Structure formats: structure tokens, C-alpha cells
Image (cartoon, rainbow, N blue to C red; front, side, top):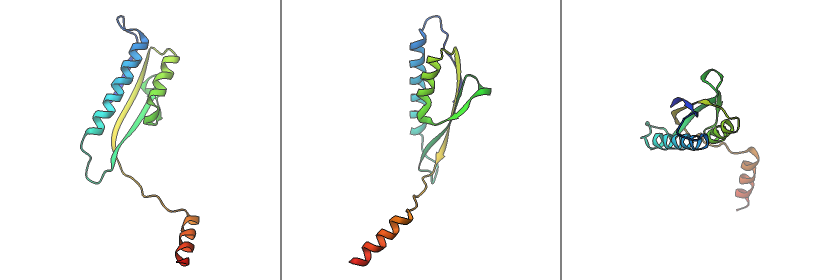
Length: 111
């Protein structure tokens, strides 16, 4: 989704328009997450960008989308740009901490 959202509407109050935009974004994320994953992928990840326009947008975390929309409402922006691109995500195995492996070795030697 690459979209400029306009807040100005003769029939809809700005507060309701912001709520509608948040709902539209949430629906889009749910729809993308329901799509079948490519082979070997663990989850759907999203590249997100937000700004007053396409030229001035910055990379944001998907969890911060609503915060940025609320900030746009507080700043009384007339429009803003939001880009959400889905990509397959791959989980990385967590490496053990060096201290934890020493504790495991010590506890296994006592048995």
C-alpha cells in the first residue's frame, strides 16, 4: 500500500476520517497476513514509511503506524503519506549468552 491520505472532506469530520484511516490500515495488515507464506518464510514482515508527503517520509516500525497517524491528527495535517510493503520474514535463532553456557556446564557436571 502506497497511499496519500487526504483528511479534508466536506461530509466527514477530521476525527472520524482519522479513525477510518486507522481502520483501513488495520484491515490491510490483516489481509496481507492471511496470504500464504512463501516456502521457508516464518511470518509476514512489513516495511513502513510515514510522512507529510512521499519526499519527506521516514522509515517507521509497523507498531508505530497508529502513533504516527495520531500525531498527524494532533499536528492537524491536511494529508499524509503512508507506505506499507509486505515481505516474507525469517526468524533467526537466538544465540546463547556465554555466561548461561558456563552455568549449564557446571550444573551438568554435578549430576
